[in-house]
Length: 245
Length: 245
DNA sequence: CTAAGTCCTGACGTCGCGTCAGGTGCAAGG
DNA sequence: CCTTGCACCTGACGCGACGTCAGGACTTAG
Image (cartoon, rainbow over all chains, first blue to last red; front, top):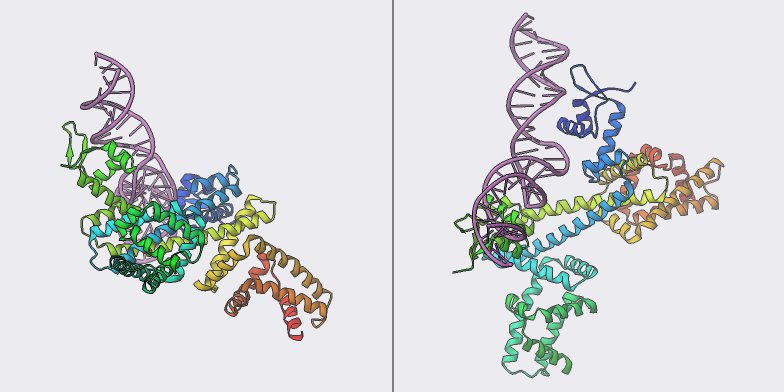
């Protein structure tokens, strides 16, 4: 007949611990088909085969209980795997948005060096709420597109763009305060820079641009307060500078 | 002073369960600063602020213990977040390879409809071991490139290519068995199809091609047995057809 | 006064094992 | 024969973030 293995040998051969095999035995997943008279487990070839099947299913992430059902023939494998893949997709996208949020927080906090803990926490709240808001205004493909472009541009470019807004907005505000004519060449130059920064965001995609405008319009007050965004007066100025240009 | 909230109100406002607030209280994360004489918890504004900070850090995925250290000022937040991000990266890549493996298994099993459970399991073993082998012969960027191309081509094209190999190999075998001259036009046509299929894999990238050849050479026996791959005789035939062509 | 709702504490269950703790079996050396 | 050392046994607790009772006290509306 086939070889009989003691539990230590099998554990080492399979790269597991003895405890794990004990665990599988208690769950009825892989039980040795024989014992010595002293009660030591003896695994036969069939047991080893079964163990490797368990490991295969474990490797793709099924729960031990699900593995048990599959090996007992109680559960069809294909739909289970299909569901499992969808579940994986969900977890992956969740982790990716999380990672993206973390990235935003980290670059933001590295940008300004005062790094107070409570500022930090407020920042995290901001980032996550912004993220939730984005999810309401952009659909799945749009978000993917944005993420891809950010990946391509790199963190530094993104940070640079935010800096550029923080510089450009005061300049436009000053121009409005000084009563500059929206048709003036300086105004048209400001509008050009403005649209350029906007384009860095939407990349020329009109769907993205429209969603962005809609999101801004419906959250203008919050953007203005929490992110030092532009107010309606500035927007009007730029709009007129564009249309007269 | 600020409003005092009972536990149920706070739970509903924060979208948590009462049990969760109990838990945070016992851990000392968020403890109510007052109680009624009957012992009911009363949360003040400061407690609410603290709760929302906890939730911000929890959303990022920190453990409750880590959150406690951060809020106590015992742990610097930035390096912790940086480490956490790396950890996330690892989990994401792990999940992605897993998802890719699952995808391979599912398409393969949908391709041929006999779908026996044990075949299924052997298939999973094959896929995962192939994946491990690939990891030894291709570096990170190469694997990413392969994954990207597979994404672009779609599952059907991949399945079609595998089918094409299963058709082409017997044809070449027949040609060799019939003693066909490697210089004959039919042989050169076979070689052209062969190289075309290879190109679908490596996409003209010489680095990918060389790694593939190396992997094949060092695992020829296994490929031949387990995947009905070509043997050395067929390869020689194609090589000669190519050089004489 | 009662019924329904809210609150309390305490304790077990989850998942896949890791990690003792306390004991037995077996072979070799002194 | 006794000890030493190793591999094995069973049983039990621990982890992490709560869910889910159980059993009881309080509160509020009718």
